[in-house]
Length: 109
Ligand SMILES: Cc1cc2nc3c(=O)[nH]c(=O)nc-3n(C[C@H](O)[C@H](O)[C@H](O)COP(=O)(O)OP(=O)(O)OC[C@H]3O[C@@H](n4cnc5c(N)ncnc54)[C@H](O)[C@@H]3O)c2cc1C
Image (cartoon, rainbow, N blue to C red; front, side):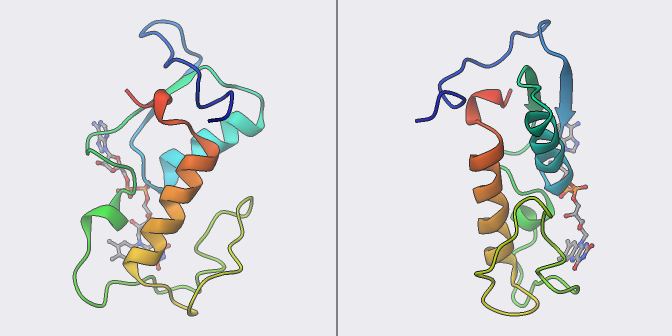
């Protein structure tokens, strides 16, 4: 466990930023804050796990419609995409990996 992961979640009144939702936008925002050296933020998520639409839409054939190397974070390129237009599970796995790297679960409230 990294030092970031071992931190306690910010208190309800003691954080600099509050992110609502843990889809691409929320995780991207968390990463931007951490890359700027801001650690005292919280992420509010409605569902039990991160992923946003990629957690919620698992119908057969669900995939992105832009190439995956573009439909990913510039700060977290993934040379392992299995195909040009990755499927839902692969995108969800990528996003959850980014969440593990760029946020820590203690940040979620
Ligand atoms: C099948 C599918 C394919 C797509 N393919 C592409 C594509 O190829 N290219 C492209 O650019 N876009 C695509 N999109 C669009 C996609 O919605 C966006 O690319 C992007 O993933 C949206 O991310 P987001 O974080 O803004 O929203 P979301 O992924 O919707 O995440 C928002 C999160 O906020 C949470 N939330 C909402 N309200 C609250 C609240 N009050 N409190 C706490 N949490 C809350 C939700 O539960 C959710 O987890 C696709 C969408 C779908 C469904």
